[in-house]
Image 1 (spheres, rainbow, N blue to C red):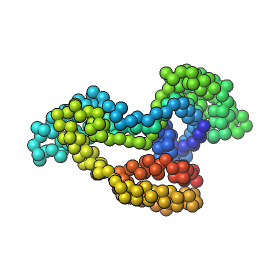
Image 2 (spheres, rainbow, N blue to C red):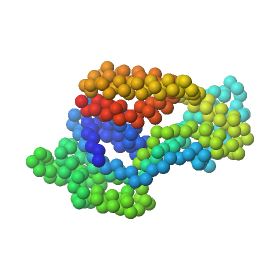
Image 3 (cartoon, rainbow, N blue to C red):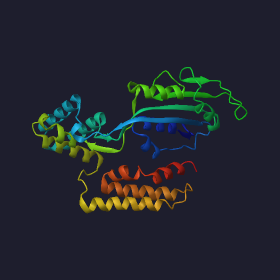
Image 4 (cartoon, helix red, strand yellow):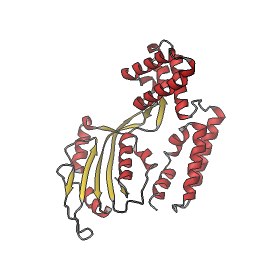
Length: 306
């Protein structure tokens, strides 16, 4: 059971969307609180219930037929494009493909089940707790308005109950959890993990027969990705990889001694380290080691609540 407070609708929406589209662990690192909208207070409390998980091996990942056809059209267009226009065509078609299908696939660990949310708008977390933890309570529909919450809050509030996965018609936590346990047909993907594999690696592993020249297709996608992101796809090996891992772990160890004061200088130091690490490792170390570290997660979360 987790609780968050947001001072702007944008911050609330970003947090909710990130959990639903990416993962809970990643959303922790990008919480942003606006101090401008003093009239807006939204406290959310959610129960995050993973009931099953899996990891997707590379040899079991395949692209959809629609994605394959798009790649084949890209290769055909580029084969008939004059050399001076190749780069622009590559950027245009590559950007279209990546925006529609993505450049990487989450291998996991994927978690399945549901998240149930309680949101109280223009009210304090004390009011929310009395309802969220009251597992025998039931709300009709997604909005219950005009609720009296005792001496601490004499005015009307709005309580929103929303769900990701789980049985759609139940707002009681106890009943919702029981039904979720009983039927995996109600489950949704609630965590996608941070282990990523690029599209071109999936092609080389499982789609060689779908292209006349699979190496050319592989090269086209890598070049398009590097052109659009300015990130090199040359993998780290040997001492370079070991050095990057050690650098990340040393920095995280140093963070344990940081006193959380909300000081901007600490955030600047962290951002500089992130940029330096990403330049070396294409985001791999930042995602797989740093963002999954409890020390960094606690620092980011507490920095924005100071």
